[in-house]
Amino acid sequence: ITNLSIIIELNEAIADKHFLYYALSSLNLRRLDSGSAQSQITINDLKHLRLQIPALQEQREIARLL
Image 1 (tube, rainbow, N blue to C red):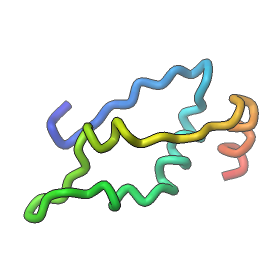
Image 2 (cartoon, rainbow, N blue to C red; image 1 turned 60 degrees about the vertical axis):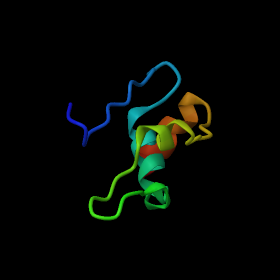
Image 3 (cartoon, one colour; image 1 turned 45 degrees about the vertical axis):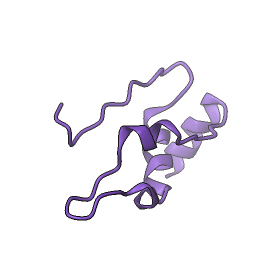
Image 4 (tube, rainbow, N blue to C red; image 1 turned 180 degrees about the vertical axis):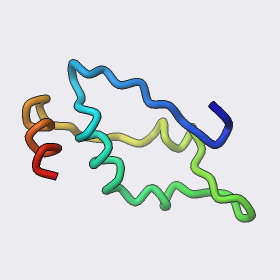
């Protein structure tokens, strides 16, 4: 991993990776963007990001529909 990439460790007992993909894709993460010459979102900014996720079965159903 370089300083331009982030890995998310996912506990699949509580979160569906497809649901998480759609949830993160729907957020306006550009609001966290800092830097002028090189656009970036820092890990510190991401630490403050909170997602509300439904029960696992509901996540799977939402991801299946999307």
